[in-house]
Length: 101
Image (cartoon, rainbow, N blue to C red):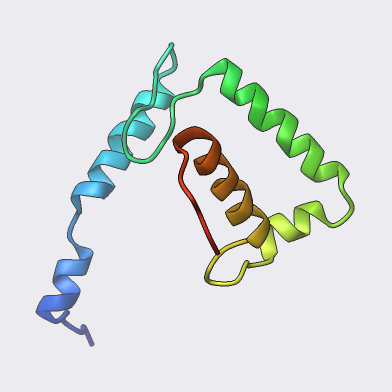
């Protein structure tokens, strides 16, 4: 017996713009060359930024429990208090904003 799809199911099985974009970007990357991926949420590889990410990942990996915290522990909905304080300090320094928690 063959079951037909509902109209909703048919729509889900059709292609999507984002799917086509991701296919295009993946094919461009797979073709090789000096491709700068600036679309579809894929950041370009900037050597200086990649070096920062690599260094930071090494720091996280060398901290006992760092990897587990990064990939499996959620912050509270308001976000990390440490991050919020650091961001508030940055805003105070850069923009003179009087930030409060």
